[in-house]
Image 1 (cartoon, rainbow, N blue to C red):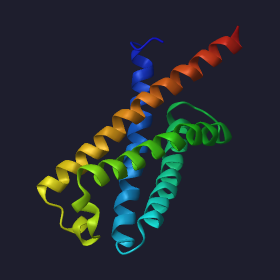
Image 2 (tube, rainbow, N blue to C red):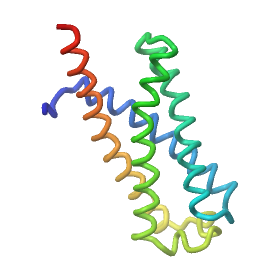
Image 3 (cartoon, helix red, strand yellow):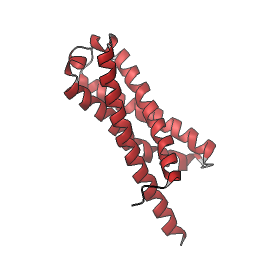
Image 4 (cartoon, helix red, strand yellow):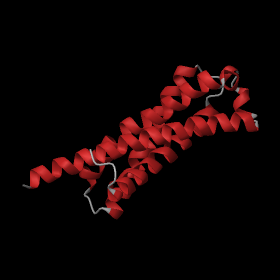
Length: 152
């Protein structure tokens, strides 16, 4: 596997940024509106909301910058977003659960984020971003290999 292809890293970075921003928006929305909800409901809402936002942004990105048609953009957006969103949201949940259980112990703690809590949230989101970036690189590399073999 070639890890030095700048074009694939660039495309993977853009894809990961879209997923990351979608997850960030979903986390903020879910945390504001579902403060007293069960953690599993909040997690599902975060995943679904992030996936929808990510696919919409990915479709717009693909249609504007890669001149793909709408159906191909939805297919590519869903394929790129599904696992990336899952990685980011789950890693955020797991890191905060194990590193900062006091942060999640009561929903009102989320409203009063201290610098320590912010650092832990930043660590959780950074880990999710890096893991998602590596996954997106692998996926872009796989897509490029498949399209290269099909063109021969």
